[in-house]
Amino acid sequence: MSINRSTLPEPTTPAGRAGLAALLEEPARAVVALDFDGTLAPIVDDPEKARADVRAVEALSRLTPHLEAVVIVTGRPAAVAVEYGRFRGVAGLENLVVLGHYGLERWDATTGRVSAPEPPRGVNEVRLALPGLIQGLGLWSATWVEDKGSALAVHTRRAPDPDAAFELLRDPLAELAARHGLVVEPGRYVLELRPAGMDKGRALTGFLKERQAKSVLFAGDDLGDLAAFDAVEELRGQGIAGITVCSGSEEVATLADRADLVVPGPEGIAQLLSALATTITP
Image: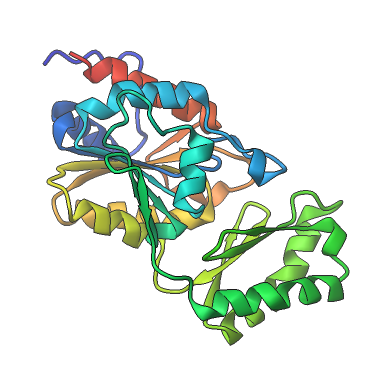
């Protein structure tokens, strides 16, 4: 296949360039994995109003049929990511998979169903205790609690001083989570209390065990995506070429420092997916 890479951005690392080359050489053996918020969907003040960039979804509809698989790996409930991504029933996305709650839930486009375990008891106990803790810190009106069913996320983006509210909540939420067998996952002005034992890296690695992939691309924007970056680096040692992409933000520099390729936010992700689709389409 003749490959025109003129529209594709160039990774800055040798490993990233090798990963992109492997994806382009044999796309039918490649997996593209993507975070949702901040990667496919722009970050917004109200998480319930987040929606995937329509250009990214259109690019995925062209790209997915030529790949081994496309998988969305997100901290959101799988069904919510499907709704906010507007993935259901889109031509070309018949084999899309969404791993929600860091892999605890799974939605397959082939069945249209979500499979998920029962939430651990600790989540309900934290759900009951959280309002009193936040009120006691004087932050009830400055924060917003997102109930994800199997996890709870406290957002500080709406606060007059989001950074100060975030830091004030960090230790008390960590103590509350630990008392009930949960962990705290920090993000972009959000602290998520969720069950231990699963992260995006494990979710990605577990998914790839089902496939015959020779290369993997993972794109994310936040600290919770570092585990998936780690997984890609480990997979390279097992003979699977990989490329890590940061959906760039001034709020999270750590991910950009670790990435093989940095693009300008969800718009850049949409452009990258479109360029990949154009490049590998016969």
